[in-house]
Every structure is written in C-alpha cells, then in structure tokens.
Amino acid sequence: MNDTMSLVEEANAYYRALLRPAFEGRKFLVAGPVAVSLGGLARQLRALGADRPFLIAGSAGTGTIPTPDEAELRVLGLRAGDTLTGHRNLHRALENLPAEVREAVDAWDPARTARFIFADPLAEHVSVAGREPYGIRQAAWAELEDKVQIDAFWDAAGVARAPSRVVPADHAALKAAASALDRGSGTVWAADAREGLNGGGLGLRWVRPGDDGRASFASLSRIADRVRVMPFLEGIPASIHGVVFPDTVAVFRPVEMVVLRPRTGDRLHYAGCATAFEPSAADRTAMRDLASRVGAALRETVGYRGPFGVDGVLTDDGFRPTELNPRAGAGLGPLSVGLAGLSLTALFLTIVAGEPLAYRPELLERAMVESSDAHRTCGGWSVTPTEFAASATLNVVRDGDEYREAGAGEDPDATFQFGPGPVGGFLRFSVRPERVVPGPSAAPEVVRAFRFADRRLGTDFGELTAARDVRS
Image (tube, rainbow, N blue to C red; front, side):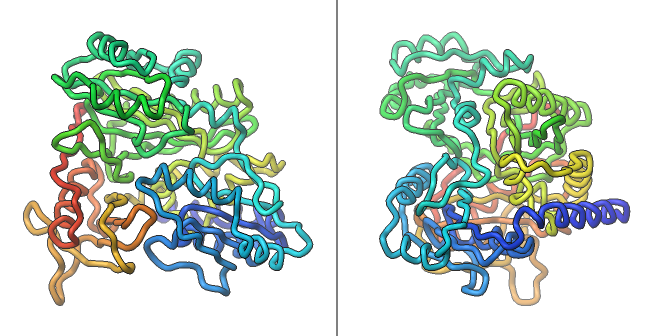
C-alpha cells in the first residue's frame, strides 16, 4: 500500500505540473448534461490555474451544484424521457442558446478568447456562442461507436468476437438472423446510428427464447435502417479501458458493467459500473492484451488519440467484445477513485487536442492499475422516472439478503444518494470502501439496493436479476 501511495503522489504531482501550462490563465466555456458533474471539472480547471469557467448544464442534477465562486453557471432546465434523448436535447439547445445565456457568455469573455469544452459522453464537434471547441473528438472516431460497423473493425484488428449478422430493419430478416444465431438464451438486436449514436443500452433489445421479436422490430425500425443481431451472451458484462498516445497505448484493469435483467420485456437495465469484481488472472491479462491491440488499431486506422473503452461479456469462451467507445467511458470514474488529485479529464483533453507534452504513459498506466486494485468500488447508479424534489442521502445496512435504513447509532454498510434529474430522478448506491469485498460481482448488491429503493423511495425498478459468472 505504501508503494502505491508513493506512486499515486508521484503521478498527481507530475501531471499537475505537466498540465498547468496548458490551462493556466485560460478561459473555458464548459457544457454538459448536469451541473453537479460540471462542478468537479470546474474545480479541476481552477486547480490547474484556469480562470473561473462558465458552465452550461442541461439540468441541475443530484448533489451539490457549483458555487458562484467556482464558476458562472446557467442551467437550461431540459427534460427528457431517457438519457439518450437528454444528450440529444442538450446538443440542440447548445446550437440555439437563449439570448440571455449568449449575452452572459459575452460579458464573461468580452475578448472572445475562451475555448469550449463539451463534457458530454456523446459529444460532437460544435462551437458554442462563437467559441471554438477544445479537445473534441473527430467524426471518424465517433463513427466507430456504430454497432453495425464495429465488427469489421474487430476482424481487421484480429480480435475474437461472437458471430453476428447485420440485416435491414425488416421483421423477416431479423427473425431469420435470430434463428441462425440463437444459442438458447435468445439474441440481442442493436440499432445502427441513423438517429445519432446510442448509449446506455437504449438502442439494444434482448429478444428472449420463444419471442418472435415483433415488438422489438417495431421499436427499432423507428430509429434504425439496419440492425446487428448477435447471440445473447451469458456471463459478467465487463469493459476494459485504455489511452492511445502518439507512440504507445496505456491499458488499465477490467471494470464490471452492472447490466441487470428485468423479469420480462426486451430491455436490459444499465446501472453503472464497479471495480469489486475480479476476473481470473488469465482473463485479466487477455482483456488487457485485447485493449492494447485495439488501441494500436485505433491509432493506425483513424489516427486516434485519447481514452477509449471496449465493452463486452466474459463468456464461457472468454471475453467477447460487443462495442467500442472511442472516448472517456463511465468506467474511468471507478478506476480513478484512488487518484483524486489527478485531473483525468484535463489530461485527456490535452491528448485529444494534440498538445505535445511529455505524458509518460507508463506512469499513468501503473498509477491507474495499482490504485484501482487498491481502491475497489461496489455499487451502481440509475435514472428513474420517479421524481425527487431535492437531493438527499440515506445510510443503509445489509440485513440478511436485504438492505434497510440504518438506525440511530448503527454503522452503515452503504449509502444511497438520490435527487432530481432530467428524466425525473437519479439514484446512486455505494458500498462503503472498507466494506467492499474484492472478487464477487457487484451486480447482486445493486439488485438488493434497487429492491430497497422500490420499498423506501417509491421507485419502480421492479424484479431484476444479475448476470451469472460462467468463468469461476
């Protein structure tokens, strides 16, 4: 642990000094889905010497919003039926900002020297209020998130994958593909990017055994021209993250994706990610090797630079990828909990922007891997249509197979944070760090937590089950 602490201190100090000249004295206009998350980035920018930033948020979010001392803030008050629609609503709103917001930006930046940072997972190249973007990904990079294109990339990179077929959004074609590929657990249908990039599983349908897929076809045909059909893969959903540098690739440790299964229907429930789960040493090595190969292929084929993540499933045949995210993924949050003094967002922005800095990829890789091994997380999060008027926190204890609210004087096992969000509400469940047990999947704990939320908070997650570990 002492060696890890000294390594973390070295990384924090090195990257603070490295990044400061890129941000010191500069102005940044920053936009993103929720103000609470933007507050963290604002504090990181200020710590690197940047001027007080201007933040534009789609909604306030759950937690503490930035103070006036930390940033200028405008909340647009956007609402949406799901997170993906929320992302798209924010994109449209930034292209047509209210006059009051544009005037406030000009008053904050009269010399018009500010650069724009789009802190959105599905960010596109866009200028806002006349300010040009900084560290935005290229269109060719974003196109690799299209589920109907990525299998050709895996094949070219020599990455083993599950069989698949890409067919027109036609019921007969989909049924035929599903019949050929079903291994007994149904098939997964993924929409193309006709309406824009998909995320959070919102463009996926799990067509279960015995289901003719008519309802899934009907919903996908409204948003897609083509659909990828794959077998449903049993196993723990997982991702592996890395960073592409000009001459090498840094790769980190695997992250569990908490993907829960409703009792009925064709949707899967994405509920965040965690690092408590520990694959076998062989699987961990194979996933890291795969990430190195993918990162090198990204650089060679589309000139990529910056963070990326490969999502997939640890099946009985090993890890099989399902999608590629050439951007900063949600798993980087749990991976970096032990590196609170290192601004990963600022670091990634400079890499994507092509700043010629001495990045020391080997230092970043070691610090991320060793600190994430030492600081495990177990929990998850989810949007919910249940509305909460204000942010609040509940302490809970594990009582047998269920969670309940902690009584006076009881030492809690975990916390619930809940509050408002653009879909209605947002909920985050976290096992206290000292109670996290490395090894088992976090998903069963999240299932128990959501049962508690239904009872105590009036949410409607319903009956959910966790994926089965087929590798142990």
